[in-house]
Length: 350
Image (cartoon, rainbow, N blue to C red; front, side):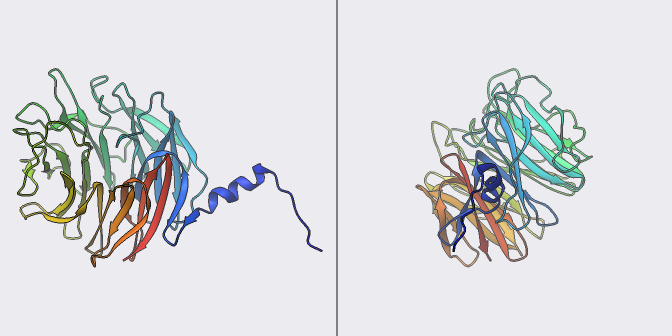
C-alpha cells in the first residue's frame, strides 16, 4: 500500500525555494524580482540583491545553484529597480555593503553586521535629490569601498560623482566630481561601472562628446580621491541623437589591467585601453568576467542570453536581458539575469 502524505503550503515553501527550477541543462529560476546585482566573496559565496516593489531583497548561495530563502534588507519608499537601475552589492572585508536609490534621486547605504542584520548607514549623495537618474555602481576590495553615480548639481547635464569608504561602508567621504564632459553632460541614461583594486579605482562610463556616445575609462591611484585623464575606448565612434541606455562591463584581470565590453550600435565590442576594439557579437546589455586570466562575455541578443566562453564557444542558457557574470570558483562562472520580473541563473564551466 502506498501512503500519501499531505503537507501544508507553509511546510513546502522552504523546499520550493531551496531547489531551483531547471530549464534545460543550463539555466534555473532563482526567485521573483527585478534588477539583480551580484558579488561573490572570498569564500565563493554568491550574494545577490534585487528589487521587489519598494523592498530591497537579498539571497545567497554557497554553490551558485542552491539558494536560501530571500530576506529583506530594507523597505525604501520609491525604490528604483528597472532599466539598469537597482540595488548594488559589494563584499568588503568586514561584511556586505548595499546601495540603493529612490526615484527622487537619493542614494542610501546599508551595511550587514551579523548575518541577516542590516543597518541603514546614511544618504551618500551630499546634495539632496541630485542622483535622479538612479544610475550607479559599487565595488569593494578589503575595507575600501567605492560608489559612483550619475548626478546633477546646479547647471543641467549629468556628471560622474563618487564617494569612498575606508572602513567597509560604515562611513563615507564627501562626494567628489569624478568626471564632467566638456560638452556639458555625459550620456544621460547609461549605467557606469566601477572596480576597486587596492589603491586603484577604475571607472567606466558612456560619454557624450561632439554628439558621439562612446565609452571612456578613467583611473584613480589614490583610492578615488582624484582621477586622471579619461581615455576613450576603441577607435570607432557612435554618433547618436539619443541615449542607448547601455553602459557595458568592466573587470580587472590578474595583471591589474582593465578589460572592457560595450555596445556600439547593434554590435558588442571588447577592448583594453590603448588597443583596437574587437567585435565579439551582436546585441546589447553586456557583461564581462575573468577566470584564470581568461575572459567570459555575456549579452542579450533579441530575447536570448548569450555567453561567450574563452575558447570562443557561445551558449544560450535562457531568455532574458542584462546578464551579469562573476567568477564562482577556479573553474566556473555564474551568470544571472532577469526575465519577466524573475531572476534566473546558470553555472558555466571554463
